[in-house]
Each structure stands twice: as structure tokens, then as C-alpha cells.
Length: 203
Image (cartoon, rainbow, N blue to C red; front, side, top):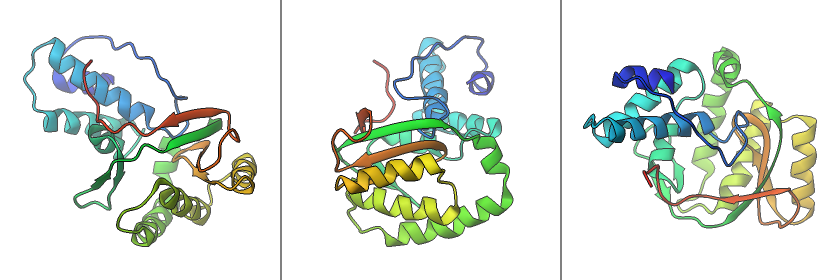
């Protein structure tokens, strides 16, 4: 957030309240940075375009080592699928359950060249496997194959995914955090949320 404010040339403090765990793979850092940029633009009358604010937030997050592209999804809202080209957005209202067991250091993961090479290879295969109009269950199923292929799931994550599957649902791991999210099973994981169809906005 500080890097975004510096780029915008303002001195301010951003106070944020998160409804999901921070540092657990939900993209909270990207959301916070984008929210800060949008709020500062309005508060100080900076007259930046939406696209410019997204780019400021993206560059700040990359420089901080907290993510690579979350802000582009958070700007759009909904279920967004993309491979570097023009992303596809789908309106989805399926409830999501989740459980979080701990953080995984994003900066360390991004600095691991071998891991990033595996992510690039397996990520392309995962995107190719998605149907043209994916459900959240489709996405979650392919996401779990991806998580296993890159070797990140911990024992706790695997146990939670197995519990969801035993209840008839599908589950996967948030990237990057020791967090499991699930669809199609009710009451298996302790927390509940949903995909917001709208992008970041002022209230």
C-alpha cells in the first residue's frame, strides 16, 4: 500500500478491515493495494483513470513481492480466467466454504525459480483443461490437480480436501496459502463466503 501511495504522490494512512484471513492465499494484499489506490485517487482528487490505478496497484504488489496479478481479477470481480491474454469473466454465485491453517510466504514462492517454472508449465495445462464455460466446481477440480502437480499441499490441506470429497464436494488449495476452499459440500469447512460479481469500488 505504501508503494502505491508513493507512486500516486500522496501522504496518507490506509486503515483496512479484512473479511478473510490475511496472507493465506486470498489475495488480500492485492485487494488492499487496489482499494488504497482507488480511495486515494478519490480523496485527493488525483484524476487518475481506472486503468492507471490498477496498473499502479499491480506494480506496487509486484515490487513488494506479494503477488503477480491479483489486482486485475479484483478490478473485474466475478470468476476470472486468463492466460496472459484477454481474461474471461463469468458471473458465479455459488457459495464457497473454506478453512485456513496458516500462511505460505508469497515472496519466497515467487523467488523460487524451479517452482515458478513448474507453475508456468502446469498452469498452462490447467487452463487448457478448463471448459469454455467453467463452473466453480470445474475450476476447483482443475485447481486441485494443479496444486498437486506443483507440490504445495500440506498434510492438513490434503486431509481437508479429502473430507470435502468424502462429502460429495470438490476442494482445492488457495494460492499461495495453507488454505482449502470448497464447493458442493455444506458444513464441512468452518467458514463460508462467495465470489463477488463486482470489481473493487467505492461505497
